[in-house]
Image 1: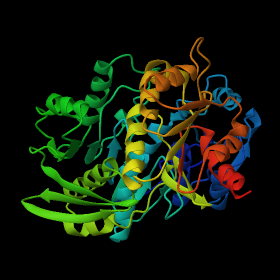
Image 2: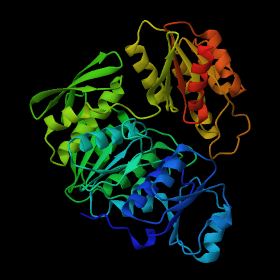
Image 3: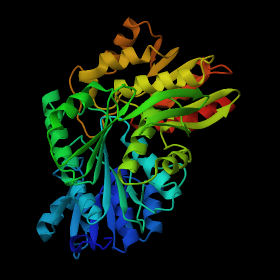
Image 4: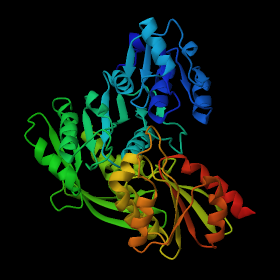
Length: 464
């Protein structure tokens, strides 16, 4: 088992250390004994968690934050070329390492499971991390969201398994060479980096082609993009392909998913035997994520019945249908969904979990490019709610695109029969929602931006 620190990572400096992917790598390195430093735009609980592990975290970006003896500078694709710390690295001839290369180096010598797909990566990676930990296998893991249980997105474990979320958005998942790869779905997203489905397929083929000889691809049997990818990689002679899903031809067949309030009971047919276990989050798509995790663990040689029991210990990830609280009979739930497929899945899950309740959605679109390409589909998804509030687009790393606004979504939603209110001032949302909500309603804050901050504010307003 390898858990040593690569020489280049002995004194790393992370630009944007508070980000979900960056902070995970920084935490693992700190836990392995590296002298970790970095900077982030603002204070956060993540920054404090890193400091507690011994890392030096600066707030704001400045050339002076980079120590002269740094062995490398770690960046993500979101870091702009004019960042002053990046310029200082060039002056000092400090190597610049992409986040994906840093993560790949941490997996070296370990039995890696890389979880890929347009949706569901964080949940599936988290399910595996929780289940393997529950079984005493002490895995290392790097996740794009915080587990509700351990309260962290990453950990260095003493076991020989490393579970990692593999990000396709910038093709960085092509850097990994896992023993087991999971592909949950393949859809067109990240329009700034991919111009067509052919480019998406080519990228996923490269990822799958990096699976270690004799390794396993666990892939969905029901999702059209995954089915197409399966056909494209079937001829890789060194690859074992295991399909999962509701298809009669699936190797691990989902026989039945039974809603149980905010949980589900799932029964699978595996190696000719039925196996039933509980998934502690609602919705068919989360049940399928759990089955993918089950199939991946079995591919590593872990007994299926042990894994099934351990998967029942998973209690969710922050921002994945996370209950934020209840006031006066109104439940507020937070969702990270920002792609139409994710939005539809989470809205249908909430409908199934509470069929007698009204569903109110506060949606914040994420990225101008995504809204430009998928705004119509986002609006159609919102038709599943009883009432929707739509905010302005959260730009993240992008500059505005002329003519691309939330109105694209609002118009499509209204055309689909949805009742939509446009709100341009985020600070007024709690008052707007309080005027709409009634006892028994579910309020869902939805999006990948800072809409998550509104949950507590809505609860506070309702309590008044």
